Image 1 (tube, one colour):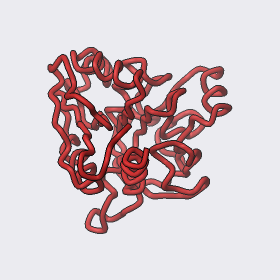
Image 2: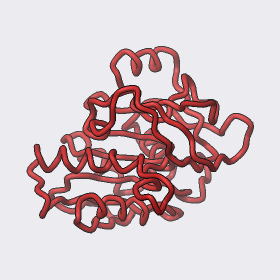
Image 3: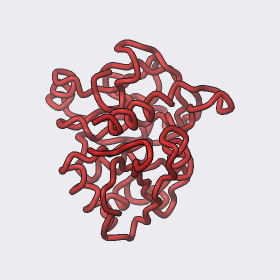
Amino acid sequence: MNATASNFRGAVITFPGSNCDRDLAMALEAVSGTPAIRVWHGDAELPERLDFIGVPGGFSYGDYLRSGAMAARSPIMRAVSEAAGRGVPVFGVCNGFQVLTEAGLLPGALMRNAGQTFICRTVPLTVENNRSLFTAGYKAGQTIRVPVAHHDGNYFADEDTLDRLEGEGRVAFRYGETCNGSQRDIAGILNEAGNVLGMMPHPERAISPELGSTDGRALFESAVRGLVNA
């Protein structure tokens, strides 16, 4: 990456039904000083020389069929997958996490919450891995508080996959309290290369005191700082 503070290029994808794309774009601009490039799901190509790609929360395609399944087959996701394969950082939050699992960029699946209810509240998260581009701004074991708002956030994977995620240090965040039934209380995971992060909680909704918390800001600052200094 050759990003600088003045030419950092972050992009946010928008799908039909996305409702957190503006939040994610504003978070990126707040920490980088550069407006995020907005990309429509039907585009076949991404803008040139991107430093960061955000896949936002919401209810892409109304959550029909399976949350994230239709969005994962949008034309732009082939380009996102190719960019991730080249090492471009990709961050998927909430529905974006669902899209990344459905697209095969992250293992496992997000199922209906235990209790079959929509959960909307601020929850404690434990930082399990602070050695990634996204989490280097936190301390290992640190507890942060970040909002969640989802109906299908129950993370599931087979035991071998869960053991591999744990053994390779790819669990980025874990719920600090029982939340949605996620196996091993997993709230966010990394891919093998460490450049793709998916998480259900919304750090973009916790970047300023006006939003009630600044605990999510370090995630974006960490990523932008790491890319600018790379």
